[in-house]
Length: 318
Image (cartoon, rainbow, N blue to C red):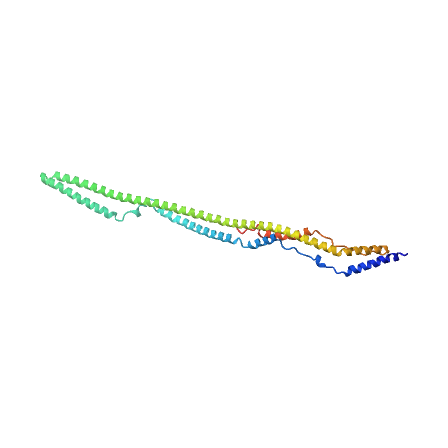
């Protein structure tokens, strides 16, 4: 029996199987590409990210308010500094040899004149008493009366000069005391103004600190939000990658099952060809399966990292 006669039943069998196999339609929907839905954690991360847009605005507005208040306090401090010079000039005018003059009473001379006039009237009464005593003693117009009158007038002149000097000294003392009091008042006012200046400067510094704190809170809030988003996104990406890997594995398994008859038929045909002394055809090769989990995880974690970069390390303050 020839080899061809021996192989004829097998070749007929191969032909029947090939016809049946290639005639049967393949349901490609069983291994169609599928994409895993977004994980709930990733959705939550995206929601937080969208809600966080503009979250720095309240802190920025508070910082701007503090900045404006600080500028006002600095302006008040500058005004106070300008007032210090004027107070110093007024205090300087209250010192020196002539500082008392602005505080002399404008009625002092009238007081002196009136006092001296009363003094002169009182001395006239004393002169009359000397004359009356001279008349009584019979010495009127005599040398004794003249001596007593001369002594009395000399004493009156001395007393009158002393009274005038006393009045002048009293007015000078009062004016000097008023000048000293004015100088003390100016010094006190200078101290109060300077204290106000220091207080305004301290207030401006406090507003500056408040402004920086608002920026710090904004940065802290956004960085914390970025960390939360990154963590949720990473976990969500891992979950989604797991689901995607399972979908990919199912697709490959279904595809392998669908094309498995073609592989067997190809092997059968190549065996017959070899027995008949011919050249074997190309062997059917199933699609090689890559690591579906690694591929899915790489794509998902790339998206998760993007969430963290949106808010991580951003600073909106100085």
